[in-house]
Length: 107
Length: 130
Image (tube, each protein chain N blue to C red):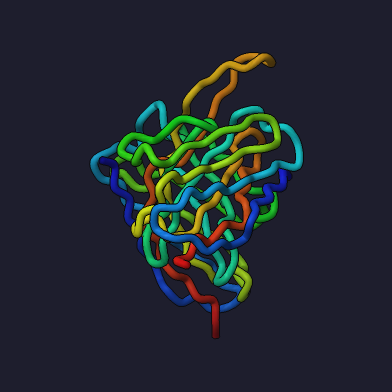
């Protein structure tokens, strides 16, 4: 299985900050990397697919980048609604696997 | 906007079979472009992909669960289902169903599919306990 490692595991940030989360794959996954936002008691929501494509309806302050083994999710101008846990997921090789999550908390 | 809703017992006894159904609305499980997935999240842990099914009945399962998992589809009811046999406390989790679709991209190594799960249910909690 391809292992996905996110860093940091958690971070504290203020409204208006720029936040970057990284995701590293244990082998090259080309650009088959997705990012999800998850809030307690709610369905996960897709933010970014294919490493850098913004899902329809997702605010443009979210952006994704990277290829191969190293990827980033950036949130520009953090908003109150963005405090959540973020997961990366590879869809290059079965079984699909997720990172352990990055919890973004209010400073 | 596709909507998915999980349903099933919230409590299952050890060694028994966990059975869940996902009802799809504003979308069709018969769609040629979509796959229908199950994912779970044990308490305090991350997300684990269980497997998916295509409208033809083709399935793909996580090898870690393959011996115990069956995903089936009912196109007439627009539903798909999950069965997990011989459950233990380790199967206690929130279970989600989701739609998987695909994008395509090119890089120096050629053409790639980029599957992603764009619509999810809200999840249902299943506790395994006697």
